[in-house]
Image (cartoon, rainbow, N blue to C red; front, top):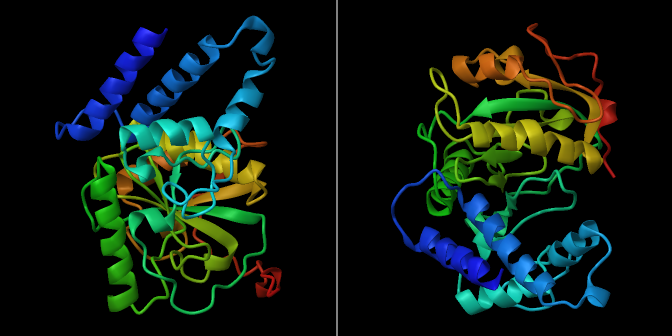
Length: 293
């Protein structure tokens, strides 16, 4: 076990050091290293010390509030064993950051790690759980990003454009999906879908998907993980409705190819997502549902 685990860790380091594009995402490489670290740790225990449930092991591994400063300037989830190995290998902290409040939650890169500028103004609270999820593509940048460095650069460019050129308070999207295996944190109340921003999350795939689709892995991050994570965490209603951007606004977003894809989605949360082809401004959703305290 130890020999195989050390080989996997070396392969993970090679993944980060190499400039060669591969099908392995950063998230996949990180999780491979996590498995190696855990297997080595568990293999060293005598039978009487073996944990009874794997779920308890995973909770202890990920859900540990940082008390240090090197990998923990911000309070988040990372286990002591993981932190110890990460510091020893000198791997970028952001590439080891996972938001795993439930097994279905995808790896989410927080704002501080992609280099976000501060929100301009006072954030407006949301009335949770929200009833809608809106799908977008960024269009510009028009190409998918395949590494943390590329995706972070795209996030900063979009935030700069939205704040400086559009005059918005922050980047427009709630979440942004890269092709590196990660979802990037945007802003809690987005500026993504005109007149609908308080009622749903705006999720954008980096790239132009008018005639092609995001990678299967990127699609699954939203379809199989983000939605269920949001429902389980009380952020999204179990019977929420999924819409493409142009179902609500006169726009080509999220691109014909991506829109055709999401119309066929049936996301198993606690119930199935319903997709609608009709265009609506949802005037039946009264502004009073948005709490101000």
